[in-house]
Length: 457
Ligand SMILES: [Zn+2]
Image (cartoon, rainbow, N blue to C red; front, top):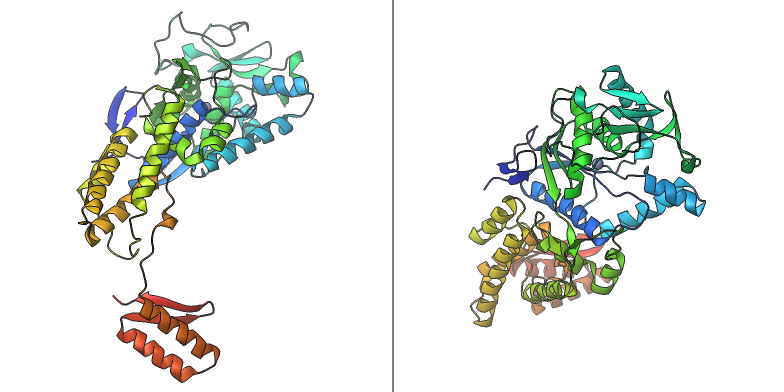
């Protein structure tokens, strides 16, 4: 089955078509680095990783970016409250984001651009919008004029009920959004100089300019949490698409919230689960499995029972894996029907619960064969392939611990005798023993690290 993704632009599942052959460019909105990300944030970041891995499974070469928002009101407030520097606050939480990402097996991105490294490009970009009559200045603030862009409102119906940012600022149209914010007294020493005076870029411009700079303003897939759809993604794309003649991104994917007692998990509600603590108490594999066990477009409620269920699932996989013997990597690894069902589930808009179901029914089937003593070599190879395939997406089992192919005792004894002969510089005996091993179907190669044993094909 070809890869299908639910596109927020059309509110439909669509067959994924890349812009350029087997190359895919993706961008996900990243963390605002003023505190440690909570579990709800990581649901989104693990979803980016899932998308990346499923694209790779389909043979695509991905070029991925997840940005670091290091200019923001909340960061500036924290810096001024704690009388410290911007860098001190942001580098601490950027590091914590990176450490938790790696602990949750999120594959590294090609780029993690920081807003502070692109301020010059942002100023240049805003000037281009002004020059094209798409933006205007008022009291040192620069606003994007939504009237000048007829396609504004791709994600929502624009009406008076919408929650609008910066309503306290004077602007021409209440829905116009801020590209550049003039320096306020409470900003302290955090500001950048521009032709419009001191200030700082707005969040929507930060992402837009990083995408423009890194990907020339054209992505295959843009993703984010569902609450970013409006106004962030609306405003991000409006700025870019108003001056370029093509889409910013062909596909927009949005992940649902993680709830606690039916309320969205958020720092402001104070109901967040600390990821670091959860990993420490349960292990990162269990947390990763929990985050992947529900479909990314469904709301999920967090509770300890779900974490305990994931623990049981991992134990079940590990018990099964302990029966599997590693197969030679060079054997022809062909997918069978069970494997294809797993791939199809993931290609159906990243349906992880369905994929998990396919995998566990395979495990149950094989466990039955093991119990009945009818588990044969072909079942072993199939199982080994499935464990590897499963791990290429879920990445929660340690395949290095699988049983190795066993070398017969007689062969091992001959290898020890041969090593003794070589230590005594008895090359004749060493050669004879090598011939004997060869007759038994084993090839010995000598290297600086000692003898390497290979089974003849
Ligand atoms: Zn963004």
